[in-house]
Image 1 (spheres, rainbow, N blue to C red):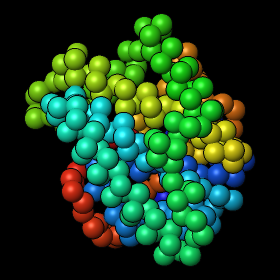
Image 2 (cartoon, rainbow, N blue to C red):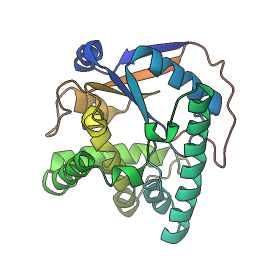
Image 3 (tube, rainbow, N blue to C red):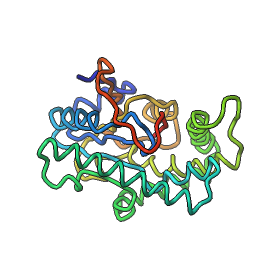
Image 4 (cartoon, helix red, strand yellow):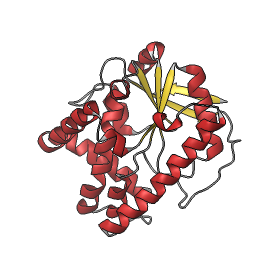
Length: 239
């Protein structure tokens, strides 16, 4: 059902030894229908020893704030959509008779209590503060996200980018060491399209690189045959 493509040559080598998949699920992205989540879970559980789903739920408020939502409303909207996505993933895993599906879902509340995640997040923020090249790369990634959400020919302002980049920084620990965070061994982060920043990241071209054995796998259906079931918001977003 799926075509898989390691993001870089380093990711290709990592895939050969990976025992775990971490599937990224964007909160405001209609791509992730329940049927597609079932298919992704079935694929991951057949290809790897274990898998988790990563949902950057609470931090989605940062992107909403960048788009003009007041902070309180942004938090409420992100929380509501995050619960909707958690429920869809739970439904998908139960359809495959997975025991304790909540254990396979990584939301921000759970990650905030994870020592390895906190260590990596602190490192990401320190590099963002101290390394101009790394900071520019993170802002460029956030620029790409906002470009897809703003009206045509409306570039994001510096203030909007400062809001939005917090979302991207919160994701970086999963790209760097999803296996260490989940204590699952060598891991592939899974998403359905590449991101320029991550190509540089997995080629070890930035100040920070993923841990040995960590890779990124682009996973897409061979044909767009899985219907979508929509959601409160539709349309593509980044991770």
